[in-house]
Length: 65
Image 1: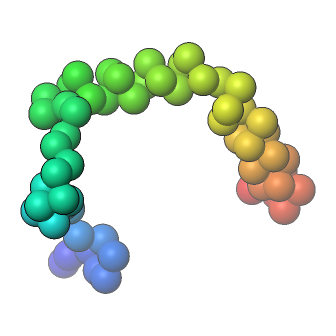
Image 2 (image 1 turned 180 degrees about the vertical axis):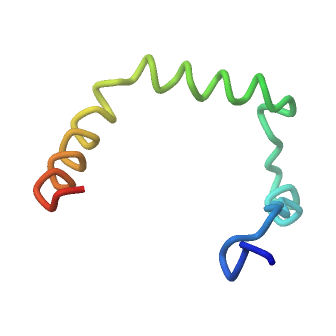
């Protein structure tokens, strides 16, 4: 029995061909390097995301989740 359904694809792929036609190129072609850069950015920019995270968590606490 499959546990997947609509919106639960086993694989996601991005077709970036249209963006490349406009001159875009990826900054990172190595997944680990790109992931580490993302983590580093979030660690260095906590003031940007922490207030929103706190608001979201407070809302979930209000509804008991």
